Length: 132
Image (cartoon, rainbow, N blue to C red; front, side, top):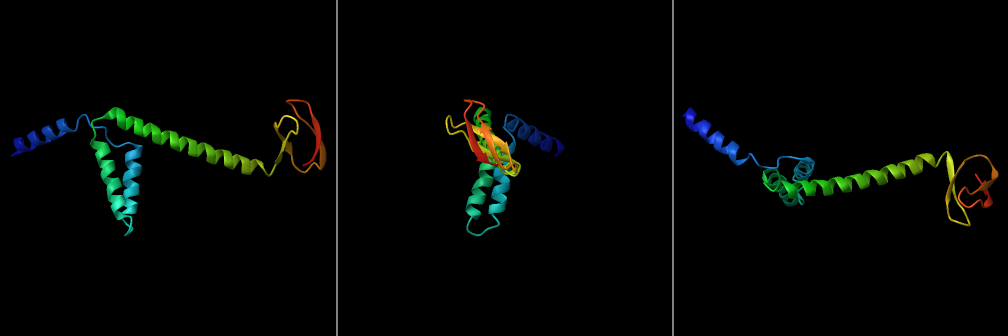
């Protein structure tokens, strides 16, 4: 009986040796599917996502699974960059005011609460007045 059990486990291990395994995309898909199955109307989509995640984990085509993961990483990186840019724009907006040069359209950052000042463009040298 123990020999049969060990033989079965060895065959099972041999079969899943070259599988891709769980990565970030598989985890996100599985967790999203688990959350969606709690809702009545979206439960088929949740079950499909969980099935997709399981299929990805047992897939033997590692190259394609890795490319899918890289696509997810590119999307997440671009989202992270846009959120960081928005956060910096909002956070820096309280200390600085952004002007645009009327001659060359260069963006210029000027400290706030200095009244009316003369701003000199560092790119083309044009001087113009603005209220900071």
